[in-house]
Image (cartoon, rainbow, N blue to C red; front, side, top):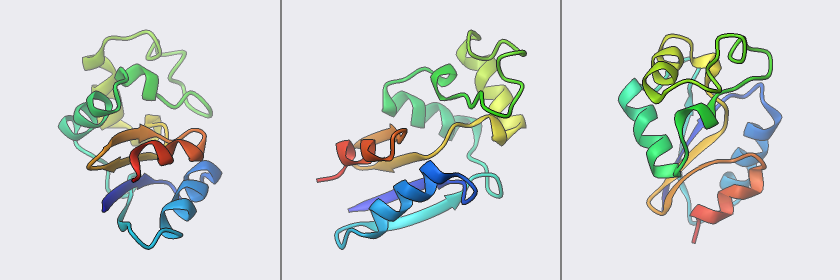
Length: 115
């Protein structure tokens, strides 16, 4: 099964999720360090839609100014614009497989989209 993780190697939750995926023999894994290669606004919209969450639910509030900027209460377009401009605002890790997308906090949530 193909899987893509939008990963930040500095994040413990992201590293733990990556380890879960790497331990599986049935996963063809693509790792995208999203701070170096940020997803497009369209890709972010698709990821959140497929995860069944609003973009504001995927905003990183720890060590960012997201709350001060009102992003946790903002409309989708505002949040996506902010994330596109500053990928540090993207909560991680996001994992995409043919079975869906999950914001893997906690890392064990990745099991929901694996066979």
